[in-house]
Structure formats: structure tokens, C-alpha cells
Length: 245
Image (cartoon, rainbow, N blue to C red; front, top):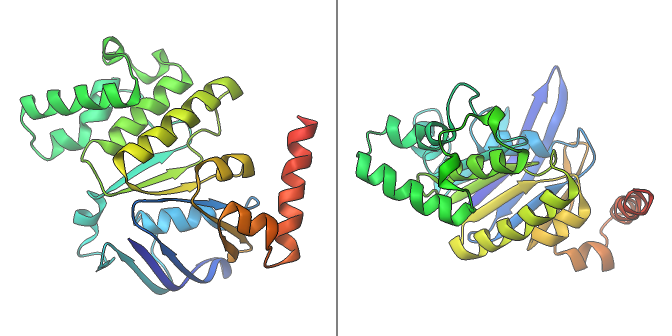
């Protein structure tokens, strides 16, 4: 579904991504993980078309991403960021329907799709006319997910979507999100800094460091067959952080 070949991105002469080769399989959840500044969010923004590579090629669903086809390809991408990224001056309903309204969907189609998404995301319909500041953190993330799914995209990109939530709400949403991913069979690419969360969601886990991919594989691959001492060190550090907290 997503293929990157020799992709690099520089900021002020420093490589945020350094000659990345990566294939993201369709209908599975792939998780990008690594220390802060490793390039995982840059990689997600590049796939979303928010930044352009300085080198290499990027193909989504068989199409090479370029400025000419970017608007059309973006309609096949859902994008969720930490804390939702909702427009504060718009209600939950308006935030969710923004692209459908922009594309001229009929009122009936908008209403039907919104009802289906509220059911899917377990969002109470009676809260649709509230503004983001009137919603809890978990509710805002549900609205962000509904907005990302509004056009029924094939690809869903999530950048630390649960990172700002308290542990109990985060655990509930993790369960619900995994069920949603399984039901919809979307191609999901998620960024997290939490190894436990990566293991919970990811069929494939991609561990990054200094703009490079250190290892990509299943959780068992990373734990039992580390490709580099950094893999073991990163996993052990995550265990220590969990025990201390």
C-alpha cells in the first residue's frame, strides 16, 4: 500500500530521514517507534504530503506521490494527530463533516455517514454540537478519528493519537481502536513512543534511530532476534520506564 525507496529529508543540512527503504503492507497496522527526534513523525508527515522528500520516491496505492496528484491522494488518507487537532471554532459535527461539506456531499449522505461514524467511534450524538473545549480529551480523539474516517480512506495515519490521555482513558481507547482497525481492515500507520502500545497494535513494528530504520518486524522478532544492540537497549529502557511509573 505504501512504498518508500531511498527517501531522505534534510532540515538545515541535518538528515531527519536518511535513505529510508520501507514497504507498508495493506490492511495491517504498522507502528513506527523510536526515541524523540528519530524521524518517525517526519516520515508520517511525508506520507501525508505535508512535507516533500529531498531524495527518493514515495508510492501510495500504486501512485507516485507528487504535487499534481497530491489533492486526490489526500482524500484517500485519514490523519489523526495528538490531542486531535480539531478546529476550536467549529463544533464536533462541523469538524467531522468538513471534508464532506467541502466536496459537496448531500445533507442526507452527510447525516447517514455521521451517524455510522458516531456508532463506530462510540461518540454520543447528543455531543455533536459541542465545541472541542466542551469535550473531554477522549471525546476529542473520537471526533478526530471520525473526521479522519469521514471519506472512508484506505490509509489511516496516526501520530501519537493517545499520548495526551490519562492511562485509563488511553487503555479504553486502545481496545476500541484495535477493534475498529480489525473491523475496517484499513492500512494503518501509527507513531508512538510507547513500546507496550506498539506491541498492542502492530503486526509490524518499525524501530527508528537517527533518521534510519534499525529493525522492522514483529514484536517477537525485535525481542528474540534483535538486529542491533540498540533494539535490546530500547526495549529494556521501556521496561524500566514502565516499572518506575
